[in-house]
Image (cartoon, rainbow, N blue to C red):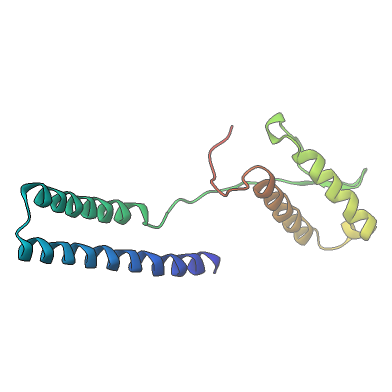
Length: 149
């Protein structure tokens, strides 16, 4: 939804700019053919035409859609002794993810003490989504995903 709005909004200035560039090249061609122009003027017209073609080729390759697929695997366990829903092991590369998930567990237990007695699959999905959103907000805030080990 958001991507289609952004894409639709980018088309307006793109088409307006391409139309203005095309109109400018047409007017320059008419000016040079009618006025005769010097050798330097013809060189500048060739440069403008070359730059326009280079820009069109660049836009063609830069504005392609991305087909990258990212898989994020998760595995959570229920610790009934604490009680907590968490990963069974938190590697050091996760940084503050452990603290965030522990605080989320604590807040969920404060809001509903019998939360672990209900639908555990829904609770697991909620924790996965929460963890993913927190990760994207704190670690990948510009949405430029990159591989991290």
